Image (tube, rainbow, N blue to C red):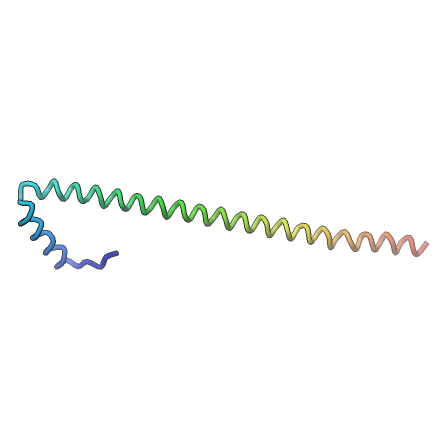
Length: 92
């Protein structure tokens, strides 16, 4: 995601070891891991919500398109029936 290589991670670890100290470094790593996990979970839930909204919108559009198509089909099928009834009446 951020395109961080092994050398960059090693440099960050050495700087953190010098700044924080060896006794507090494991606790700091755990806290950072928790924050990263929470951030990932938040991003994942936002992505899921967006994809659900997109699916719902696509279903609504498909339903509207289907309803429009069925109305058109009913209008088309209704007209020939009227014409056939008129034709039958005209033939008598």
